[in-house]
Image (cartoon, rainbow, N blue to C red; front, side, top):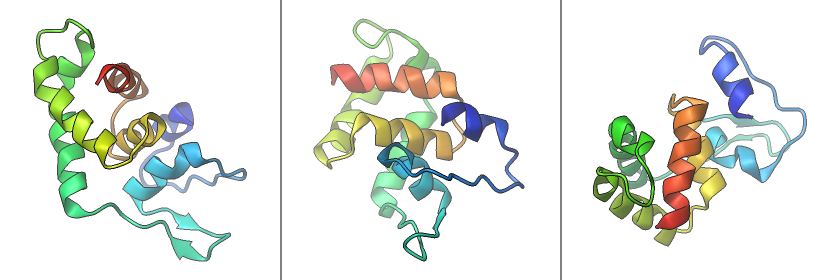
Length: 116
């Protein structure tokens, strides 16, 4: 999934023939059309979107170690907030991809999510 999103130019359509819940974050971030439901995947509320945008601005800190990295205090509180809101690790990773994060950044974000 991460490779497909990263390899698809933003002006082209990405078609998912087999749906998986692991696509839910990405689909919400990009406002994907769900042909099976004949509707656009709902967006998150603006406060949660702001939380994601805040997280992605700390890319250097995300690449630091999740357990001992010097910048983790900048991102862990926001990740705890997303976890408390019921968003799982896969959703957080794929939502970040939908906002333009690299697959590598999304993987590091997941490592942080796992320790909060």
